[in-house]
Image (cartoon, rainbow, N blue to C red; front, side, top):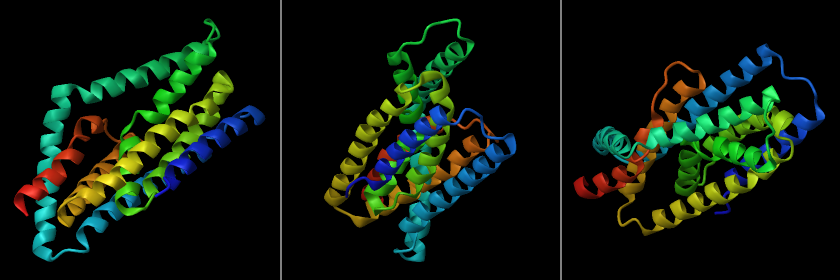
Amino acid sequence: MFAIGTWINAIAILLGGALGLLIKRDLPNARQQQLRTAVGLGVILSGFQMIWSGLHQVSLGAAFGLIGIALAATTLGQWTGRLIRLQGAMNRAGKFAAETFARAQSKKAKISFNDGFMACSALFCIGPLSLLGPLQEGLNGDFYVLIVKAVMDGLAAFAFSRVFSGSVAMAALPVLALQGTLTLLTAWAAKQAPLEVMLHATNVTGGLLVVCAVLLVFEVRKVKIGDYLPAILFAPLLAWLFF
């Protein structure tokens, strides 16, 4: 397990940042919409692929049981996320990145290299796919979610490099460190799991969260995906208790 998806993600940020410095014009709105649609479809396919990875190896009865566990885990995860205000913390990080970007565009305030680096790191590292992507690769060796995230981050790096310059490329380093560590930890935890059904439950739950994330990509509804992320911890625990 070499965290291939995370390397692709980091390279996409570097490439997007470099192209943003070389190409002085923005992508046409029509092309941006096409890319957003492609990314959204990629998120949907990645989510269902995770769900299928958890369900296709078990009997029909066990599959229904895993779906029930996934729903229970997401409910418990939401309660926990709200209690610790997980989505709120993610929103604050996103707000910091947006405000720093706005100040840099207005040219009324001097933005340091460190400010640009922190804003880009927050954008690329703090989000549901930053956890769900490494989870998928660590469990199954697949990195479809991280490829989708790589496209999103590469496009963002393309835009951010106009105002933050080289600090955008440097933000690839925390992405590599964070997501690579999560991938390796997930792979290690999967090997320690006493029951295989625990891995199946985690796949189904993670896939469900990935599918829900498409609502954010298409801006259909502001789903507080961050509050649901603790479900990833509840899913294997519930599977261990009830299977």
